[in-house]
Amino acid sequence: MSPDLLNGLLEGLLAAQQGLRAVLHALGLAPEVHGQPAWPWGHRIAAEMLAVDAGHARQVLLSLLCAGAALLALAVSLPFQRARPWLIALAAALLVFAPWPQAHLLLAPAVPTSLHQSPTGFAAGGIVRGQAVYQQHCVRCHGADGRGEGPDAPQLAQWPPNLNGTLLWKRLDGELFWRVREGMHNRAGVQTMPGVGSALRDEEIWDVLDYLQAHAAGQMLREAGTWDRPVRLPGMAVQCRHGRARQSRDLVGQRVRVAVAGPGVPLVADDPRLVTLVAGALPAGADAECQPQGDPQHKRAVEQALALVLGVSAAELPGYQLIVDRAGWLRARGQPGKAAWSEDDLVCRATAAPAPPVGAATAPVDGLQALIRRMDAEPVRLVRGGFPH
Image (cartoon, rainbow, N blue to C red; front, side, top):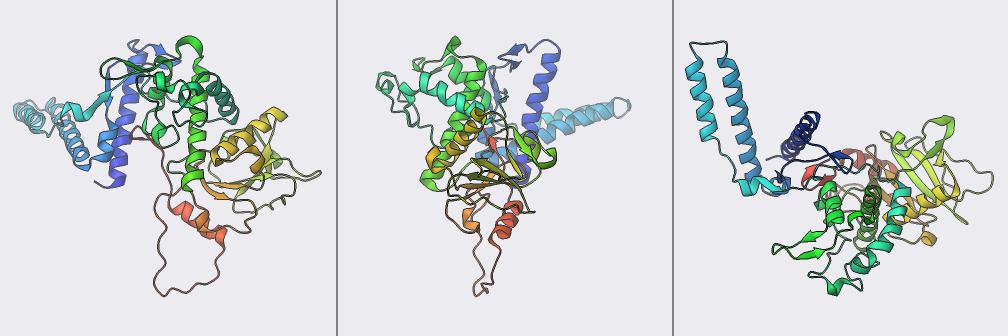
């Protein structure tokens, strides 16, 4: 199955589940739980299996096509009385002989918040608040570095997982939320992670999850030199010339370069190919195309969130640059002191770098333009719990 067809199938199944939940909520059959309509069943579509098993995905697609054809045959049979028996028989045959997948492959356990989506927008302020909550409530088990080696970890029935890899992207937002709120148990029913219960507000749990994602992204970049999963630019209030934007999300649809100013760091010049957003301390009298706005606390939160996703300390941050694609994903990193951009700076990639043709001439290339072309030609897609978002 082609990637585009598989993504279409997964997106359709996610939209169908969300639509069904919305209808049930409107009918009063799916009440709100933690601020969003609950998923009323104990199972959902197992997108994880569809994403890794092409044969299973084809089987599900064929079954859906058979079911759709059966419904069409029944609908056509209504106005045609003479042909109705044949059309009904055709619909029954389609349903009987469809290659229905096994239930244990098609369905995965679900919780009431399985289809909940984070309402935070991955905001810089929330990331920083989540860091404080993590240090107060989570660090004793999960450790200051998120590797699951906190002082209380040996007392648990199972060691906490390492949160610095791709684990957070393998779970749906709402299921991560539920695990933090309600805790986790193994197959024998033994508690492996205590839940926070009412000790944290819903907003604090979402902030913790944002912090964990930002921290994991930074650790991946620090250790492997890449973001294996797409990461958004932390949300912030911004002030741009001519009042073009008030929030960083208003810049989606444009390429954005984020540069962190600081003592001894030359201020980057504007470039018509992208919007330049300058964080950090600007030199006196200097002007930037866009910059974070608000009180000093907000600006510090922006710098702290950027430091987390880069995997560096706040003191190391000045001089770093980031390029954000038109969809709002962080794609490239420029390190302090580097004079020019190149394709090597692309740290969130859809594919491996293409090898140059044998014997190809090495003509001078504008590194930033080559980077932009490749970034535009190879868009990335966020996948959570097997579902594209």
